[in-house]
Length: 53
Image (cartoon, rainbow, N blue to C red; front, side):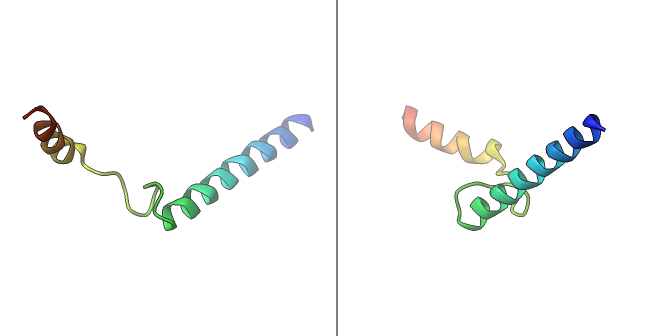
């Protein structure tokens, strides 16, 4: 019975963390699931070239 309670607790924590990250994404603080990750190949190279020149 304790294992079921522990698994339910872990599932609740993960669900809460996901909802928190989605809320932060709506406010523009992070990219989580909806917007996807930025392609750093193109973006960071241009900024690095600017800093070094």
